[in-house]
Length: 214
Image (cartoon, rainbow, N blue to C red):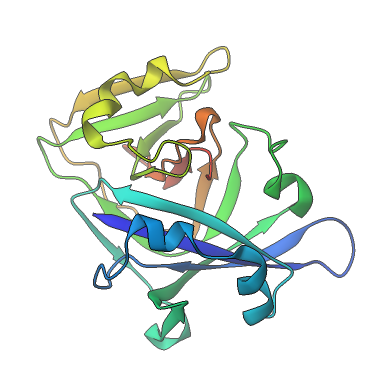
């Protein structure tokens, strides 16, 4: 399913960090195209939303079988230049300029404040990164930010395109049993290389996300 999101950042009073509010289209009618989302102007949106910067996360394609989420702002729908979005999460980054730049370190974990369940059914094919510590990050959606033609059929060989650090692995497997749903108010997201953002949940335990944001 096509979807996309923006993050409106406000700088911290002290230091280089910033807090972001996440707006996402999931759960709403798909009434926009990839081209329409790419045409959005981050600087203009930052001014409209009274933020210091806006980061564009998408366009994307959801891969989970189902999802549930706790919406912010009483479920109010916000129009982002004609694209309907819900407020779904918040995130803090320690260095806003680094986060927005090409210097953002890959495979570094960020915490996202949200209450969401990504659901995968028995028999579903899942794509996951495994960290050197054994943490499993299961892909929830793919990004078309860098590769506008990336699709599900290309995911089995995505590992050939990722520049994985030593000890990291990319796997594709079929679920023999569905992962245990585990909603949390804090999810984890780890930017990966090659700008293929993959939000995710582990096969057990806390929800995590991996992938480079756009």
